[in-house]
Length: 181
Image (cartoon, rainbow, N blue to C red; front, side, top):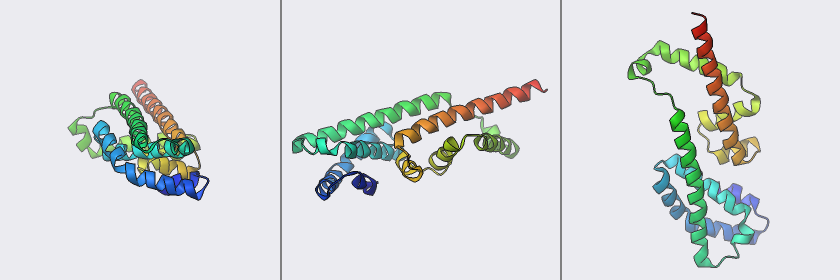
């Protein structure tokens, strides 16, 4: 992640300054993100997003007095963490809760995974790629963005859109199954 941010900067002086900024603030930023998210992967994602934002505006940030850069870093990571928290909360409200009996039923699990595989296969390529990398393989938004050559915010947007499309497809499948009986 650091290498990606360094590549975003234009001069060696900026790269050196950013690397120092990164090393000084990453632990504080991670701890702050963890205090909000209580999840290592989400906290790492928030810190990555924050550093990408900081790298994009580093020319302006490097002009801040030294005592203000920590505050700026914490504010940026706080906002990223709160965005992730809100997205997780919205997603949690939409999560389907299965009973232990359903989870233990091998046939039921195979049917659910089969339906999900079909729904993912039917997605447009741009959504399918994000679902596979970001959701299935667990790459961060930043890593997925780098692999696909798009912005991390685009990854998160496509992931949310893909989840919505998958939910609609699966619900439609359930409705179709119910009508045929």
